[in-house]
Amino acid sequence: MLQLCDLDVEISMLKIGAIVWGVIEIDRAVEFWCQALDYIPKFPPETDFAILIPRDGNGFQLSLNRVTSPHPRRHHMDLFTTDYVSEVQRLISLGATLKDWNYEEDADYVVMEDLDGNPFCVIEVSTLT
Image 1 (cartoon, one colour):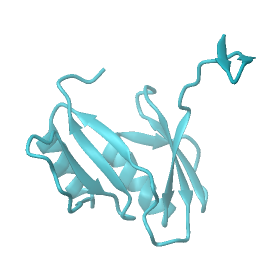
Image 2: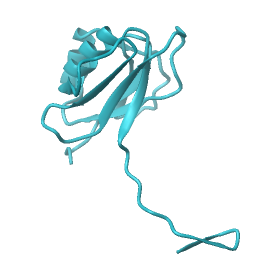
Image 3: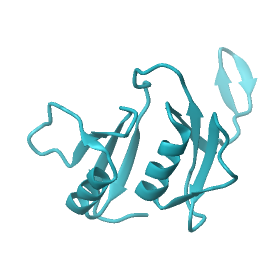
């Protein structure tokens, strides 16, 4: 039990079921994120929503939600890799761009933008677990 403001409150464990990502064009975003993350559509994409899941079944669901604002949303993903340079080049070949960023001297990440201008980070890690 956790005491909050002198009330007994039972806290249950939560887990992330999906990340919801705002995009302008569903079909274009499905193609990009499926190739970038090796995901597949869980169901046939609709005109305003799509659910993507890892091809191998392990990992978070990514839900793509159609938005009308051309401005990037205030969210981002951190993508972990053991081969930072190759992954950044691969993502650029899929249409991602490098975002202008003020990096610290020993940065182990790069900030990129997807096809809709949404920022995400590619981070070098020693192992993927």
